[in-house]
Length: 295
Image 1: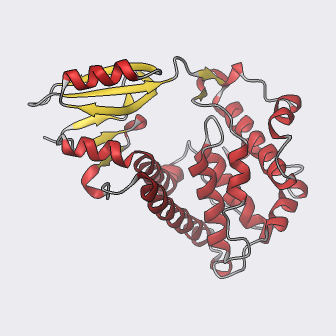
Image 2 (image 1 turned 135 degrees about the horizontal axis):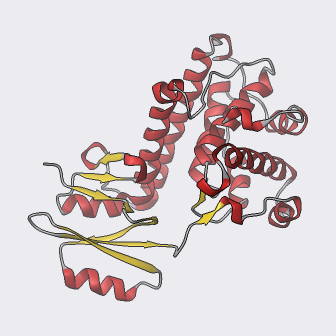
């Protein structure tokens, strides 16, 4: 039977795996050295494995955050104009996602980090073929994880806007969470994306688990990562680069699948937008849009 360890603590999903050992003394020593909130879990394998989880003491509800103009302006004052425009649209998308899923059911797992949105714009090959530009926009937003939740859903929405900035008449295939279309083709892309970004941030932790004969790490929502399927033996900086490249290719493949599913193969080889084209569309092309329809 496969030996499985949880990435998020089963009773506290805001706590994630930080350290593992077969030694009680070693794990307790590590616990004493940590300044973070800690939870310890013992896995009763033939040779027990002890896992230390670190995290925040509580998860906020979306209803506890006021997404108003003043709140947002305070956080993006130092961003460039393009960064401000993208941030405003992302927050509007997040608000729409919260509205659709109801505030009290929508959890906020981290702080809002708008400076990472600026970094996203600096790492896109503007003017490259459209699937590449759209895929890179989506990938970089997900990798930088600037929002407190819904980074994949808002990343897909930005991919859509990127395509629309080239062809405003483009009709996006349904990607709504609550229908069979999502489960049939969108969700597998998101699941694989979450696997890649989790391995990217944790290659050394997962390498240690592999040494302890753990076979599978399971994220929340039941997403399983079979460790033997990933190259873990590299410096953490190399892992950041390697898996960022794989994630970008994965999102580019998703952009191509979107265009093919929409029967718009004619856009596969079209030139993608420049940064200014994209920002202009976000400012002027979405004024009457009800973003709730995207969720």
